[in-house]
Image (tube, rainbow, N blue to C red; front, side, top):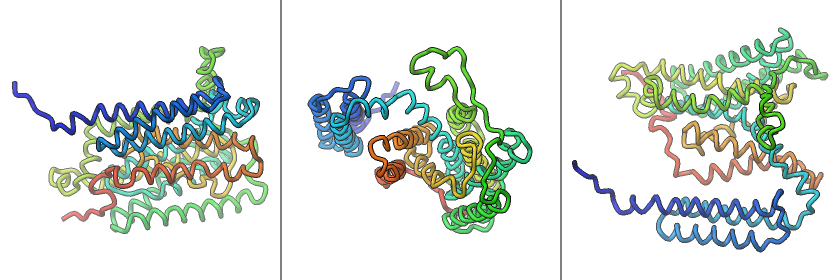
Length: 400
């Protein structure tokens, strides 16, 4: 049996990455020891752990594994900064803000619309079509979902019509991006402004200054009775919204469809080399149309969750940039379902934390709300030049 010799740098890289992950973990632990339930009142243990994390990062960087080494150093700096601030805070305020079960439950609620949209964006871009219009598709789903639920007195019909509105909006983007071969970035932004104008006009025309009624049917929660009384886990998962469970299920389903089915292979082939895919009989246009429409339906489902599953109301531009955050999560996750979902959970956690930080300062409440967007900028800046999009992403295809 012939053995294959790997280059020395490949053999060396895995232990270095393992050490970098140890450093990242130590940086996180340095913050955790100063937070409830441990709540150490001295910053010295956190400093020691952060120094060990930074040393691991420096060691890895000097061995040419720069990316993960810098992650370890950043984790050390952030962990110690949080720990130091926590030791300066009173125990009472810490215990009010840092309630882990409540933070994780809120994280899932905030992450759910992002997960739907990021998975949608992933299918579109895997087929070679950049979908900046996720924001507009979410907004359409949010408005038409709650309007249909109100007028038809059914959250099921509201959800379905919201998803359908996202499909129609995505079809507009697909026609321009695929059929007319227009610039996909411009087309996506046009969809966003179109959705903003349409939903804003109809909202004022239908509901006026009073806004949406308070008795609109909403997507129900799923209560798991067997988790009643189970500490921590029961508080998080015992009474989650139905759409949260659907989002969590869609993560492995999307991975399976994309990487384990013939349809997923066709989508990836069209996104990597459409000319070769066309040569072997794959209809490039049909695959791209289907992927873009599917992305619009998923994004709209996330928007419908916002309006009839989360806040149970609608306001103009209520998505507030979530479509762009979902796009950043998809890029951060390297166009893969689990990576994108992990980034969405990270952004969701920052949103949940931002909701509780005004306990320290009412005047800084608005500034705290910017935390998820700042984190998005940092995350995208950290992966620029390192993530690898599909080779034909954003490139129109003309059949010959």
